[in-house]
Length: 76
Image: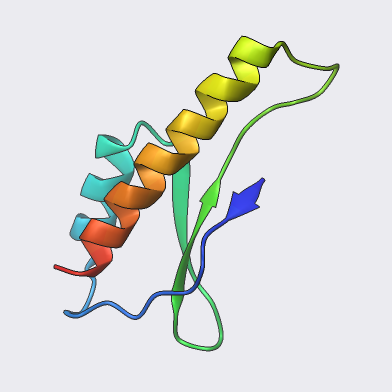
């Protein structure tokens, strides 16, 4: 699992907003609020049993895209 840096949203987050973000990002990112008050996004990927270069590339691209989406979501 990969994790982004911590973010403090510009506007307060709502459950509906987080649900919409999760839905729009196909469930690959899970937004978590830590004790420090910041939000982090956990990206889930399975690498058990080894992977092909194409699979790894696909997952890295997915991580980049969804973290860009997360950053945009936090800056709204």
